Length: 257
Image (cartoon, rainbow, N blue to C red; front, top):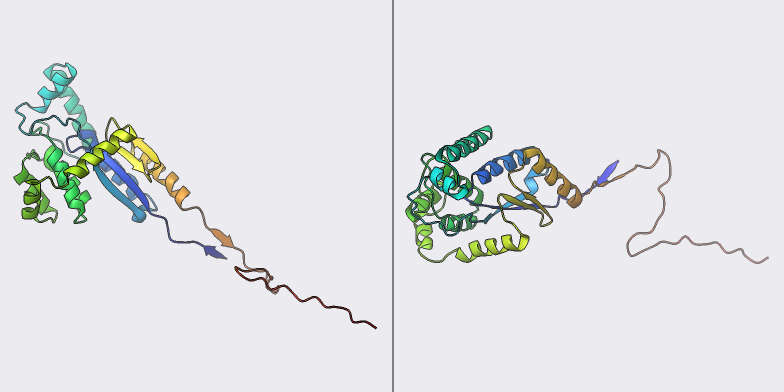
């Protein structure tokens, strides 16, 4: 039997998230777990898009995350700390180490610009990962441009070029376009996954949910190929028409007596 199959169709996954979103880092890990067990993972292209949870956030924030959270939701310091502790445990289950006590809240617009710049070097995912680790685990100030340039160098970008770009409006339009597209899709929370421009998955869903979505779209893009049955042994090859030609057998005409 011979399988008639073309090469697999690529599957693009667009992900909206914010550096300052704790669920986004968890969602990234869960998506990576889903991808690791996905048969078509080598044909998946992941594109990261900017989403700011608080576009008005100052670059220099003097309050700790516990105080910001308590003020936002009208909770006591103890209640806010409980939320952070629960989030830390959730992250730990995905192999992530969160340190909210050292986290420095800041505006993330420039960080998103750097992620777009990293795409030009083919380092977008590495840059996203490095920034999230710097923010949630290491307590680095990812709102400072010198810090961003140094982190960019760690993943293989030209530090001086990144630093110079940040002093211009480089990639600012791309970040705003991401945000405009998010509004067009109706995205109000992150992480948000768009698979093949067709399916949307909201939130840091478990790996099995994300894998199921990948498999559903993959099956649509790459249907099961036909399997040709070999002729029965000893049988003559069947005749038929081919593209552009059709050999019609000659009909014998009886001769007159």
